[in-house]
Length: 339
Ligand SMILES: Cc1ncc(COP(=O)(O)O)c(C=O)c1O
Image (cartoon, rainbow, N blue to C red; front, side, top):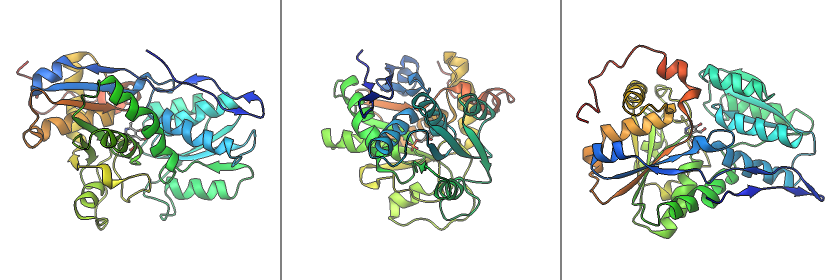
């Protein structure tokens, strides 16, 4: 397989040479048999920073460096559920910059340790409820960048380079790897960058491809896609790391999304354990939410045998050992019992 080697040449100097993207797309025979259709997994844990967020981090940082929004040695600042922060920390370190990452206190211990290991300065915040909430990751990150010399807020929630990363890399990869046969995509929605970039690219190739999103119950994307209005904030949505919002970010493009499904945190945890028991694979929390969605809505999805559904797995289960795999055994009835 060909890898994309990406470099930024600034004033005659290559700042980085790394391989982001071209992650494997593999058929999951176990799921294909369970749901009687062709099911593939796009495994983004094969990126150098072990998540899909390497793509967005690279595009946002390259744009900032190339367009001199930050000077050498400056500080990249981001509000993150952890993965974007890790990707930024790794890239910043390689290129001679610093990283200051604002994460919500719900972030997994594993991600916090990784962030620190890559030299990021970490700030724990009360919530991630958007730029207008004074104790949110987004507000505090923006305020920090505005008040710090040579600091740049990458702002994944509103940075068009976030969508562009997936439009330019993930979308074309999926189209090529599926040999132009993908019919459905199921993707967790956090900033909206992945679903929007992938959705935009795939729909340009074939308007019939269904682009489906997954979010936790009480998150706002479903209401927004269905009514065009942002639902009134009532109760906070279930905490599934990486997905779900209380506001609609600029990185989300509803034009390329057919439907948003909602799942519980508990049903996601349950299915992660059951999937592990069946396949020996530890999957991330939002990947588990994608599986929980497939199980919960299989009747409505009405997949045919010839359909090719791609499940987007943004990271690996080793970032959620405490949250997903250390806790008590699954309480619910066995989903995959029949196999
Ligand atoms: C584990 C995980 N899943 C899903 C997402 C959502 O991706 P996006 O922000 O592109 O919507 C993220 C984003 O941080 C994530 O870290």
